Length: 236
Length: 100
Image (cartoon, rainbow over all chains, first blue to last red; front, side):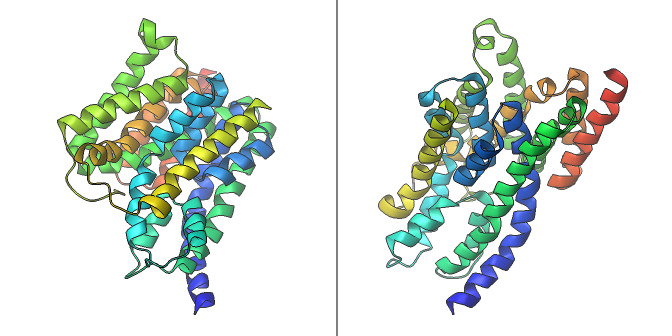
């Protein structure tokens, strides 16, 4: 029963943990560049479990933009978890105790959500908890190693490893853009506006974090008005 | 010390977003605008996070721009997360060997 389900979750979580390891290593390098120490890097990943959310947070910390800006950044960049949380709540047996809901919500990520949704019928929370037990260490350890390596490596090596995270971001968005022209247009416009915001007089003065926040809200809202999305796919 | 405050606000906000629907709301979001907005956010935010930052984290902006081009092309050709990021990394190593 529970024990077997837990082990099955743990096993299915291993490939996710390995994938996380590489991304969170990149997060660790970025955290190092923003002068976070190893313990802070560990807390960052252990408490957040979100790649774009953590990178957004790092940009806010790096420029010391304030706690309200931080909360706003999390609200926007992680807002999609609201949808996933809603969808996952439909897949839990109605009598699932609150404590289990609080536990699985802690590590509600795109990958684990995908895994959970692929299970038939009501989700066995022990399956999810098993997958979390693989995913969480992969994510946290990767970040810790990233910060450590950032401390130890020479400048030229940090320079190269810094682009790994961006490479992974590209590997997430470009294939979806290839399938969906509207998304492709959004990506192209985002690149252009990102560049524009870094050179235009008023926007240039803002920190990188604030520019990311403003551009994300404005461009996503514009895309939502111009091209309402009809399908139900939460994770592309 | 301020960093720990930032980390606390980050974790709290993110956790609340994740658990509110699971615990209190328990109803699907039907608003078309909100659903569409949330659908586009990941692509837009990852794109604006990547560019132009990829050109500022490297010692030479040219190496960063080249890594971006390599990343886009290799992701378009269907390479996975890890191969794409390794190619970007290698591009910077090779170019900065000559440029810096």
